[in-house]
Length: 125
Picture (spheres, rainbow, N blue to C red):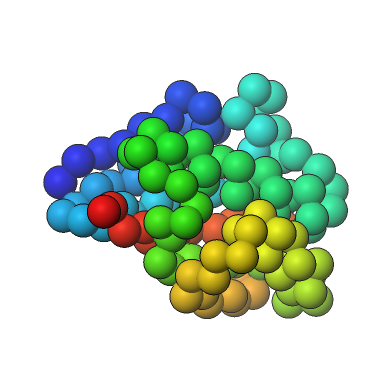
């Protein structure tokens, strides 16, 4: 088991690893739309926040030598299911044709009042 850490993502705000490599799988902790330079939520709308979350996840994947095309499963957490259509559209654009398995749920609240958080599992070839 190996811990993965990228300096191009926000610092963890808790006692957890950004990602753990175990065998041929990479388990990425949930990322919120925190801009790594300002350490503040980026954007007030779901599209901007979804883009930032995926950029943060990409940085962790890149640190492990992977891309979004290695992702096999995502879990999306939304502050409100009414945000689903706009999040879904942005997510599809960011994944550029790649369609990993996915679950999407609404939660009562997210850190720093974010609108979205995404965690993922990727396969290491």
